[in-house]
Length: 315
Image (cartoon, rainbow, N blue to C red; front, side, top):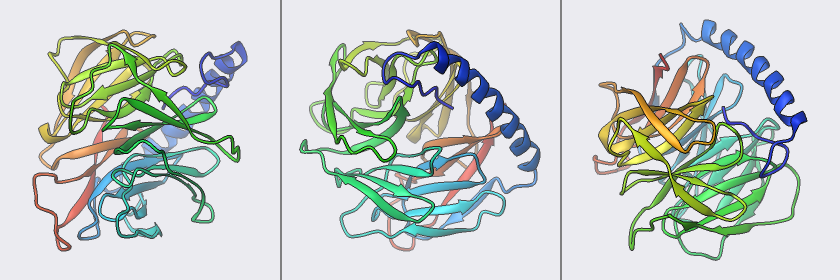
């Protein structure tokens, strides 16, 4: 669970103290979920042809998963694995990164469609849609401060939109400093926050580097990896305290790092793999589990191709 300070850039003393209380509350809730989820399924199917990419979980017990095929969103009950569509898809649509806020608003990256959408999961209606002018692949999202932040895999820029009912609109923050943008294809992918709540963490998939990014300026600095040469094919990021989980999709691997408070270094702790992994892309945590969707990028997609989600223990 990421720290979300009251200011977009610098947490106040009240926020830090409140965050500690909130963390204790979440820990109690997570403990309840941990006890309950021992009997919950660790694998459940998704509709044929769904092509999952993103997954988000709130306080439980529901997971939201987005489709690369048409931008639809599906909700699954983690107690049973049963699911239903809560946002219909459309030709040319995509739903990649997802993040669920405490108020029930789900922020959705639009992938190749280049859109950003906000779904009220209480009514299953869209409350906002944004269309950045920069062409690209809007890939992943994190909630930070009073805004949601999105990566663009095809351009060195972040997008940010207000959380909640605010309507001050879409902003763009160019990436600079030590950021390395590939001339073609995907660069920026997963996004998280630093343990101290002062910056963002972004993974650059093809070069296998993690970057610490100042959200105010877009200035990026390379995070020093210790014990690992790179995180190539890095996709979804999940941070739990000072522990960062990096999903390396085509490697069928989750690499686990210990971060310092400012995320200037990442020290390899261990790796997690599972025979059920089939190019997992993104992950979301509930209790003592990580839930992942298998995108199966190495399998040609058809309307009959099968897909699923799996859970592994955090250990």
